[in-house]
Image (cartoon, rainbow, N blue to C red; front, side, top):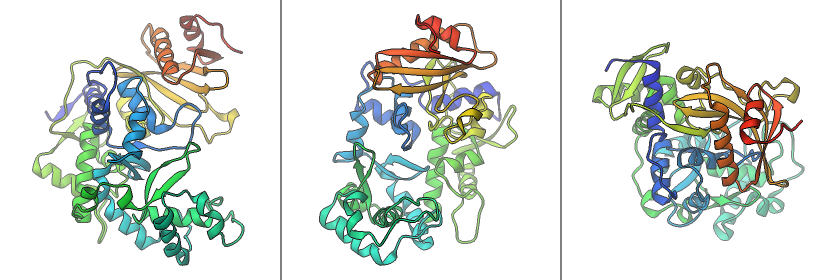
Length: 409
């Protein structure tokens, strides 16, 4: 196969991400493990207007599930997932820790990220505090390691000195994330008290071997992808540079070994690569909502290439300038993104609010009814009793009718 239609590429991508897996009546640890193997990572984000970002991709593939499945995997021994800067801040299988050591070394050489520097004189003291008292939050150490009022000179301006040092120690692998508090604060501890011994004792691959393995995993999770797609999945450098590993070198290696097959995809400007184990289903029968941070749609150019769906998150856009809403989720029906909805969980009133709903061009008949069923399912998973639809968007009237409730104005 040296050429794919856009429909074939879309179905391959959906199958690779787990949207054709047979559902389990009650999602279990086995369901969780299968789903995590498909996505590879779960992006972490603090926005909680609906549900924390890392819980949503599991729901989108598994359906309503007990969120303790993820909490246990991330916070109880033997841990199966751990947070690190894998895509961005993300939960990843613990087995990826050795593959991230080249990134940890890079952060150590560059003294961190984002342009602000933790106080190096505090590092051994903070590390000793974690060793003696861990697990700890930055708040637990804030007063002890404060060196004066916080500044606002750069991104992260509101971080205490303890938080800056802990974040640096996290980036370089000297501490690990043991969990999060109910307020979503990071809990830090020593890696040997967080990760399985077998993971810590695993040999460290060369930087290029690590990048090649990460590209291999990205290719499996994508099914079919361009070179920038493959590099973006684990945020890898694409082009070669002196002394630095490269996703392009990895792609060439995987093409030579036959694991990746160069293909053309109708409508794609870029060369595509098909993983040799990718499956092309005859049909996809998905019906679910996707978080803005879902691996299927987090790379917006790929989303547009696969689905013809122009998608931007508008959280940071002033309200009067937003086109679709604050926290907008695409609606996947079959093998297409057919609508988008602005959602909010109003926990005080136990209602799932839908301030706006928009149909995509060519959305099939019955889209409103299918979306209504999905919103009822989502509300039930979130422990909410009602779905309340606002009056913004061309789909809001039909959606309100399908739900049997008047529009909220």
